Length: 268
Ligand code: 15L
Image (cartoon, rainbow, N blue to C red):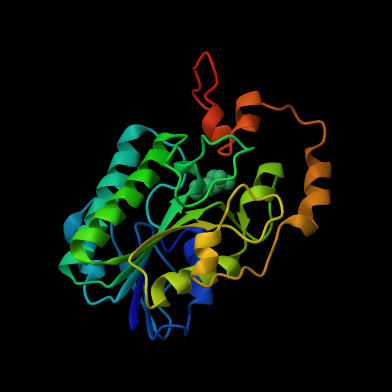
């Protein structure tokens, strides 16, 4: 990997990877639709709206690998999800095919499978159960990646990210948290592993309360360094006495499942 593009480089994960991948690859190209900090040595800074194929082709030119973080990172109205996450991801993969990009790490999400109940332990082979329009857009990204892997030979690592941050912020996140250094490790596996065609892994640290069987990530060499348990006591103490929504509590996707919920009988 000589030149690696990060889309959505202005977001929380993008800013973190900008630091942790500095000097890992000779050139980091950073792109977003919002202004980014000026380029340092070994960096190129660009601008692209993902829904604009011409702009996307410009940022993808001459890159060897891509970390695709761009798009809307939570639930929203259909139109912005459609433009940024669905059309945008299509434009990115299509521009990558035309530019002969070898590898793409995709930030998908736990919300692609958020309607699995919490007592289910799920692995990378389960069918998607999106919990939101946002989750549907992430399931779409995984399906599109599968097409571009099988038909065009681009290698994809789809990382179903739980919750990225310096520490888990509530009880649900004790099960799905990922630390910045663990996510960096996963991204590097996605870009550098010699034998990736199409893989789904969970972007989570080594959490004792995890809902995921992340054997596929381990098979690829992932050895998470962090875990949520040391934070559990403080997180649970802070949550004590808070009102609980039964639908949010029942499913892995939490409040994404409860929002706009109108089913009479909860799905199994
Ligand atoms: C996500 O996919 C979002 O991007 C992030 O903002 C959080 O909501 C996270 O999931 C989560 O489930 O905590």
